[in-house]
Image (cartoon, rainbow, N blue to C red; front, side, top):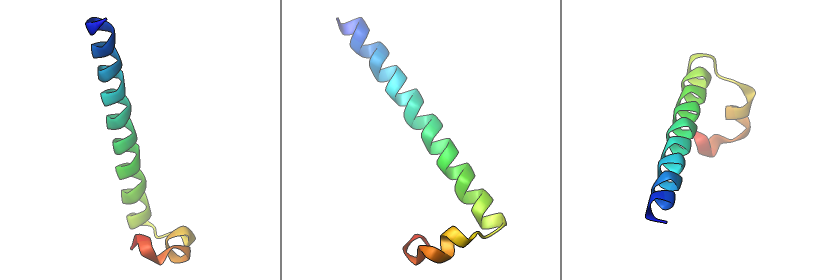
Length: 45
């Protein structure tokens, strides 16, 4: 059981890492070419 929960934790960590990487890439892309989405949501700036 401990092995199973460790695998789940590893999978969750990998998922969080991928999500964080995608989020950062999206922010950098928006910073390079500002989109309307940022103008619609000033709280993100």
